[in-house]
Figure 1: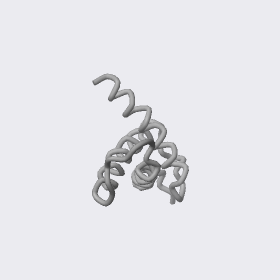
Figure 2: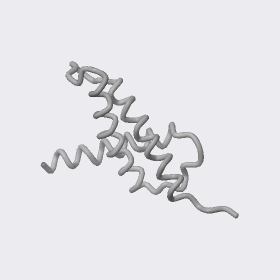
Figure 3: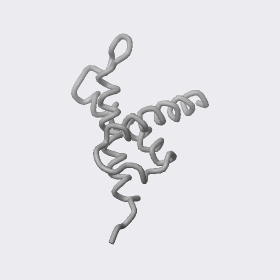
Figure 4: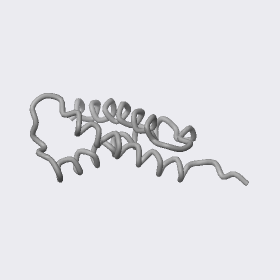
Length: 89
């Protein structure tokens, strides 16, 4: 249980930061804690969507699955940036 939570936080941090890196637009207003949450959500959503279209059982590292997770995290980071961004006059 604790190790699964630890891996979710570590994986969410990595996937969230990669999603923040590839997301277009101004993403600097998104704090680190929200980036990690977007990464965890991106892992879950990307994994689910990948399983809908492809075989979820693969041998070794499944780079396509991680690509889907990064794209999902990037979308979540863009949504978070639009919701938490500074309002300009």
